[in-house]
Length: 314
Image 1: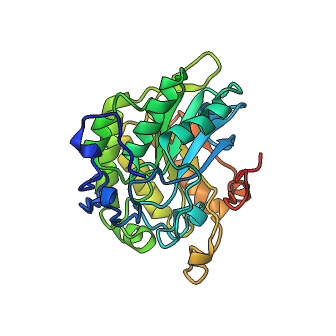
Image 2: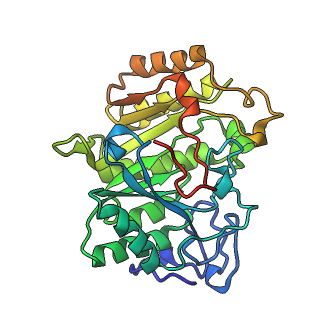
Image 3: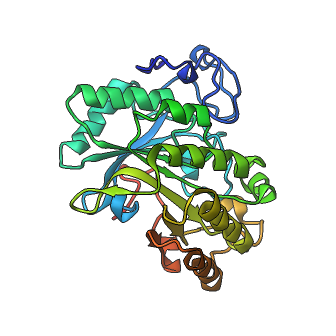
C-alpha cells in the first residue's frame, strides 16, 4: 500500500526514490525496489516496548520502538538480522500508517512518552506519515530517529521539524572495513556529513527533562568491533575534532557474532576486554564526558528474537 507522507518535500517522494545515500531512483510506488528491497508499503517488522536503549532514551518505562524491515546497509554482524536482511521477504505487521498508529498508541497510553524509529533511513515517508497519524490522535511523544548513520543530508534537513532526538551510529572510520562488513566503502564520509547535519540541528547539548530523559538533542553510538581497535580510535578522534567532545557518546561493547561472520575472523568472536579498555582510554583522553560505556558482558543482553511477539526480554 503506497504511503503519502504529509510533507511537500520532493525528497520524500517514492516515485524516484533518493531518500538515502544509495539514491537508487526506483519507483517504489509502482512496486519497484532498489538496494533496500522495500516498496512503498509501511515496511514495519515490529512495534514493541523496549527498555534496552540508553538510560536517557528508554529509562524505566521504556520506549515504543517501530522497527522497519530491511536496510540501506548490509552489515554482516547485524543483531537485527532476522528483519534487516534484504534477501528476506519482509512480512509487514501493519498495513497502513493508521494501523501502525493504533498499535503505537496502545503502548503510549500506558504512560510511555517517547516513540523511536529504528532503521528509518530508507523509510522516511512512512515514518513521517506514522508520526502525523499519532499526533492526530492527540499524542505528542518525543520522536527518536535511531539510524545506522548512513543517511542523506538533504533528507535529514527535511526532517528537522519532525525529529526531537537523533540517535545515529558512527560505525566506521575505515572505508575498507565499511565495505567488507557493510557494503558501503563511502560510509565514513557519508556518515560524517550526516552527523554534521544532525549536529547543526541539535547541537552538542542533550536536553533532559526533570527525570533525566532526553527531550531534544543528539546521541552518537559507536560499537567497538573485535580486532578493529584502530577503527574505533579514529572514529572517536573524528567525533572530537569535527564535532565536539561535548557531544553525548554511547560507546558500546555489546558486539555479538552472527552466523554470517562465522568464518570471518576476528569478527567471529566477541570483543576482548582489553580492546574495549583501549577505546575507553582514548575516549577519556579526548575529553568525552557525557554518555555511557558498557560492560563487555553486555554482549549477551541485547539480542532480540523477532520470531517472538516481544522480541526483547527485560
